[in-house]
Image 1 (cartoon, rainbow, N blue to C red):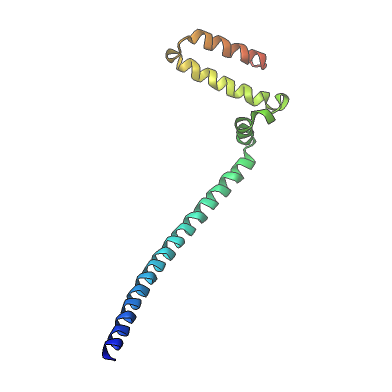
Image 2 (cartoon, one colour):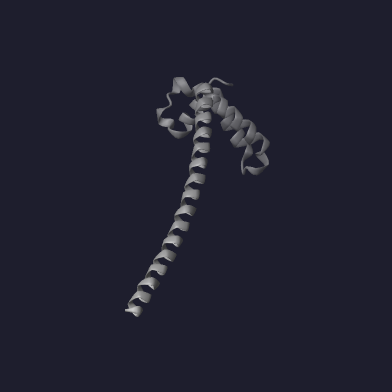
Length: 120
C-alpha cells in the first residue's frame, strides 16, 4: 500500500513538473504572439501609410502599374510616363557609358526611341 501511494505521489510530482514546463512554454508563446501582434500592427500601419501616399502620388501608382503589368498600360495613357522613364534611363546610360560595350549604339537607340515618343 505504501509503495502504491509513493508511486502515485511520484506520478503526481512528475505531472506537476510537466504542467509547469508546459505552462512556461505557453507563457513564452503568448509573449511571442504579443510581440508578433505588435509587429503586425506596426507593419499594417506602415502599409496603410504607403497605400495612402500611393493614392496621392499618381505617378508612382502608374509607374507600379507599368512595371507590374506593362500589357495593361495603354500607349496613349502611359507614353508620357514611359518618356520620363526613358529620359531617366538615357541620363543613367550616359553617366555609365564607359561600362557599355557599344555606348554610342546605346545612346543612339535611346535618343531615337525618345524621339518616337515625342521627347526629341
